[in-house]
Length: 84
Image (cartoon, rainbow, N blue to C red):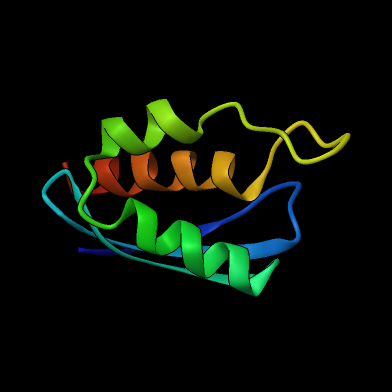
């Protein structure tokens, strides 16, 4: 299942998440720090939604209240909930 999440408060503007049940298969960011976000995308591939949330939720970027990683944790949960 593929899902598009519009980010809030980050340089990236959207995250495309592909899940297989509760397993993250593919992630693609639009905008943001290209190299870092490619790395994050590869690191979460094969992880469960819960693993991504517990690892990335609450991370802040500078003075912002969120980060691309934090937004990814929200995106994978939203994608999972949408398929239920």
